[in-house]
Image 1 (cartoon, rainbow, N blue to C red):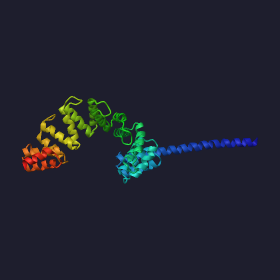
Image 2: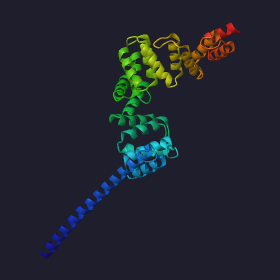
Image 3: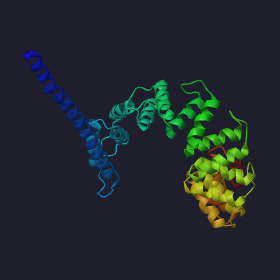
Image 4: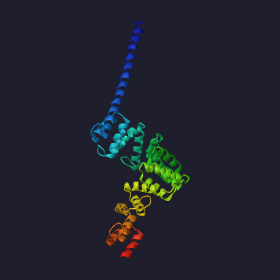
Length: 334
């Protein structure tokens, strides 16, 4: 009987001790989570310069400390810094290692980022199948960029059987999250009737959404649609406005088109000086139509002093690119 009582007392003593051990372990784990979270916040502060002087190296160090404690956000952020070489020496292999750690925890942004490394073979052996698997894991969680890449894979047939219905599905998911690139790609599908019923009004709607988010190709496409009245009411003012927005992004074709609008006085007040300015920006980037246009202006003395030598110089540059009208002008002048 004494032995039973003694054993019972030992069990009473042991049970609280076990409970205390479990509680201590839980407190330690919570402490690590709290510490990691605080380190991530510090990393973000130094990354953005919020309340402290911006210091990318210090940000990377705080992210490293948090990442080593298992924080997925920090692991992703540290991977991103290694990928871009921000605050650390660029190292795609280390980027892949940290992305992998975060991806294994189901962190959607890391899954997508790691998928891109596999897509391009940066820091890992190129593997389109692995990229697709990672994009899909991320996309299923609602990550817009991964949804965009799923759409791109299905539309191109890269690593998967080409499936425009699937491409449209994924692009629409991304587009509804304001992915400008997805919106622009959807616009192309609806404009061409590729994989969906051709619908110019739908195309214009998606192009305009993407254009408003700054997508260059969408700005040019919606400008063309307003100019021609395709899918929208013809509106030269809107066409000119979108050509100008694209031109301001430095696109040589858009600069030529903006110059043409000023030259014709369509949607804007006619202004030869503005036309020359845009043609010149475009021509210096090697755009043949602008080079030819400048040649014409120098030949005729339109908005500039007449200068046959300058005209020949611009015509020559355009002709060297196979622009037949420029070669014809050179034959006339020589």
